Structures are given as C-alpha cells and as structure tokens.
Length: 479
Ligand code: 5GP
Ligand code: MN
Ligand code: MN
Image (cartoon, rainbow, N blue to C red):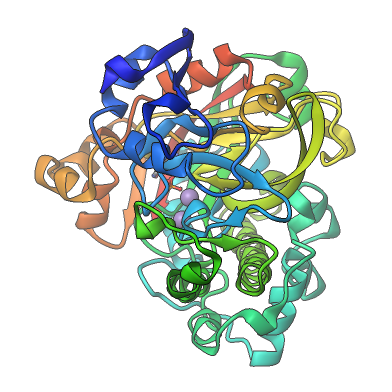
C-alpha cells in the first residue's frame, strides 16, 4: 500500500529495505504519482519486493513507469545481480527472449504515401506472416538453425536478407557472443525451425508511422528523422524457440534451486547462481535465443523492404535501420555501485537499454547523442523515439521503459472493447489495421494500455532518456 512508499523525487519512489525482513535492497519505482496510483492496483509492486530478495542483487530492484505484473518479475523491471556469483533468473528476462523493437526510416513523407496506405497495408500483411504459432516461408535445416543461433542477425546478412550496415545499427550488432546452441533443446529448435521472418500474435506488430513532432532537432538530425517522415516499427522476438528455452530452464531451475539453498517466496522467480552449471547453460541458451530474435527482426526488415518496393517501386527509396533494441534480455555490464565499477548481470524485462552519450556500445553516428530508445504506445495512440541519457547510468542501470505498459488484462480488454467498432473508428482517423482476428484487436485496444505520454514524460523528466520525436500510426499489421 501507498503508505510504505517514500518519495525520493517527483518521479522516483522507494519501498525501503525495512519493509520486509527478507529484502536485500530497496525497491524503487520510476513513475509520476498519477501513474503510481494505477501501479499499486495490481501485484507488480509485490513482485518487485520479491525481486529485492534475490541472492546477489545490487543497489535496488527497479521498475519503470510502464510496469505491470508478469511471470514472477514485473514487466518493466530491472534487476542487476553480482557477476559471477549472483543469480540469473529466466523470469527476469521473460518468455519472449529478446523481444524488442526495430525502427526503420524511409525517404518518403506522409503526403507521398497517404493515397497508397490501403495497398501498402495489404502488401505488408501478405509479405509478413503473422498469427500465433504461424510458420513462415523460410524452413531451416538443423544445421542452418544452429548457424542462426550462433551468428544472430549476421546470418541473415550473409544470406542476402539485408546489408552490412543494418548490423551497425542493431544493439550488440545483432549478436550475443556467449551463445551456445548445444544448450537449446531439440523441442525449442523444432519450434523455431520455420518461424524466422514471422511476427507471431497479439502484442507483436509491424507499423507504419509518420513523425508528427520533433523535440530535439540536433539529435533527430543525427538519427535521420524529420517532421512528416514515414518510418516503420517492427516489434517481435524469438517466437516459439525463445519461449521453449524459457520453459525448459524455468523447469530445470525450479528443481535445481534447492541444491543451492535458494528459497523464494514465489517459485516463479526460479533462479540459480550465474556461475553454476545450470546458470551457465541457461545464459548460453538465452544468448542463442536472443540471436534468433535479432535474425528474425532482420528477416522481417527484408520482408518490409520487399513490400515497400512492390508498392512504391524505385520511387520508394531505401528503408534504413535507425536502431534495434532488445527489451527482454540479461546482459553482463559494468556499472558504478557505491562509487565502484562492478560487473553485474543486468536483467531487463520489458525494459530497454538507454545508454547515454559517449558509450562505446553505440554506433559512431549516435555516440555524441545517446542510444536511440524506441517506445511503442499502442495502435491508436502515438509512439516515441528518445535518446538515452547520463542519468540512466546513475539510477536505472542504464535502462528505460519499453512501452506504455498494459493497464487492462487481455480478458478485461476483450470485455470492454467492441473490436469491429474500434477498427472502424481507427480507420476514420486514418489508421489502417490488418489483424488476424477481432479478438487480437480487442486485446490490443488503446484503452488496454497506459497513457504513453505520461510514461514518456516520466522518463524524460527523470533524465534517464530524452524525448527526440513523436510517431503516429497510419498502418498497423497485428499478429
Ligand atoms: P510488450 O513487449 O510488453 O508486449 O509490448 C511493448 C509495448 O508495445 C506495450 O507496452 C504497448 O505500449 C506497445 N504496443 C502494443 N501494441 C502496439 C501497437 O500495435 N502499436 C504500437 N505503436 N505500440 C503497441
Ligand atoms: Mn514479445
Ligand atoms: Mn515486446
């Protein structure tokens, strides 16, 4: 309840360690008070307090303003554990390993394409397979799949699904180095063998947007953005393969935990020491699944480019990758804790990395400006591009929110929303929707999400990431 929450800043709150005897660190919440009232409604802060008990956790368990409850950990959560002796927890990464967002920038303006939005949505819907469990047009042999798992997005470039430059503008260049495909089960590989180039269901999408507002001219120029410009957002992850990796290792860890004397209030937080055998195996399998996801977003990029050319021909120009960020992943990074540089395992679940200017991890073209942070809102509202800023290293382990965040459960959204009406209403506002089912539209309705403006205002005011541009949708392909 709210009386246990201490205000640190207008946008930053803390549940102190004294709140519960088993907390090892405080729990901290990045959110304006208006959002906090909503946040205390579900189980997410309870879950956050549980996260604060994980062996080896450093400094604070954190949630971003888009937080809502998830499996074990809240979605919108960030937890850094000591490397290599702290724990790694699959629940702190999520079932959709390396779910993330890629932003493409076009050479066209809204007025160039307004008349062709119908054919464009149709063509995108045809080129990009979507839907739950849906396979795609690429069928990989086991050998090829292993190459994808070890090479990530580079596999797609080598096989002509993109250009070398695409990798430069992908977080980690589209590859986690510690991946080892031998720790990915046969079942996971089977599930992934025909799903490259597919977006999956529900929350995943490909969306055409125009830049409706620029907040920072200099950074926008560096990112290649200007007012009126058409861009494309791609949101998906590692599909059935990543889901199976998570399932396999959560099961394994639930039984292995006792061997390491780990006792938790919530079994969903299943974890083992990072440097244990099970911990290492999971981490290597997670890296492999992350590579699959980057390869997937790369191949979808290729499909989007194909659709683009089919509709606009040469006049359509080329779609460049602006950036690609992971928002469900764990990474080994160095952070300053109590004045000392330390290696930690940063779990980001529904949280985006947001490194500030100067970070060597950034492509040269962006290095003076901070990492692009891509924040989708919903199919009926706006989305944002921000730039990571220095404050993120001080308070959030270099992280930021990943979206608006769910406000209503899927079931509640279905109860409240009339999907055919919503589709028509969006169409009237100039937003073309193509979706596999009306159910999907209802579950993903704008009312199902929090106010993205308020969420973004929070991170902007905190200095974790700064607003660069606002995007508004004109065509949405939903899984
Ligand atoms: P998640 O990764 O948690 O499933 O979703 C990330 C965020 O994407 C959500 O919090 C929501 O704000 C946003 N989102 C969901 N559907 C759409 C959509 O169709 N278009 C846009 N622009 N954002 C969406
Ligand atoms: Mn996902
Ligand atoms: Mn996602």
